[in-house]
Length: 113
Image (tube, rainbow, N blue to C red):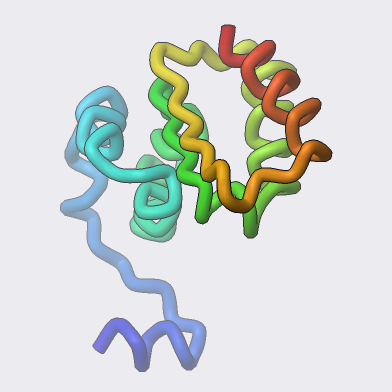
């Protein structure tokens, strides 16, 4: 059902996903990786808002290697809009880490701290 609705561009309307307060949604999203939490943003505007202001950010090496510009944009948004960060996790894969990413790590850490 969801896949066919997605293919034809229908919007799924489910008002029950909006009955939770944003702080509870953020608590739920806190158990997910950033990549998993991103997928919930299509549920409703409330979930999108909760996802876009998560206080806990966890980026895995697999995620940021593929999405470095996205992580950079996310961190800029948090900095520019003064969105509080309570917890920041950035896993690092030594086998695939190039020296060119180190300045980005420092920039992201600067925003998080």
